[in-house]
Picture (cartoon, rainbow, N blue to C red):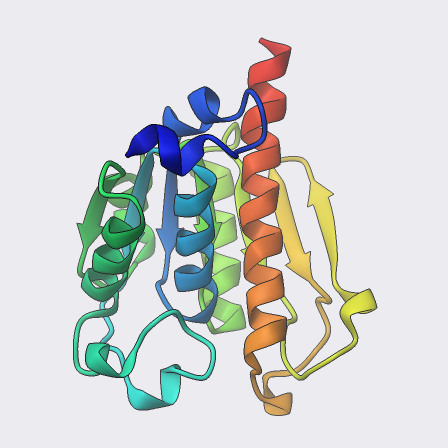
Length: 202
């Protein structure tokens, strides 16, 4: 089955990606879409962390189904990923992410994906990660609200901090699946790029 899953991947990427470990901080709109894309891309190891349950109001933008309502997001997401690729290695933590737990949860990952909702949470995660693991990338989402304006979405890099989105749209504009998924996939794509480019330089 494994060869069938990956035979159409970018040539030379499968061996690199299956050795990688990526952490996903939050399994909501960004995190669930990121995780699904990375699983399909061939990432071999994912660490999923979230404390929340799936709600009906999540289904307009998150990778869940009506049957998942009431289930823990990280567990439901892990089940969907396993249905896509049974051979992927998943580590699941059901807890709220706090600054003092960063090392325990994500200390062994190669890249951390920030997938929080609130700006203040995004800030402390970036700050905490950058101080603790300055040599490891953190890929963040900022500005995905509203609809359209695809040309405003971009990737900005500052050392090992990567920010995807328009960085200006306000949550008051609401969240629509296409724009959330685009930013999530920009994050996933950035992770794949970093991993493959790093391997090519070694």
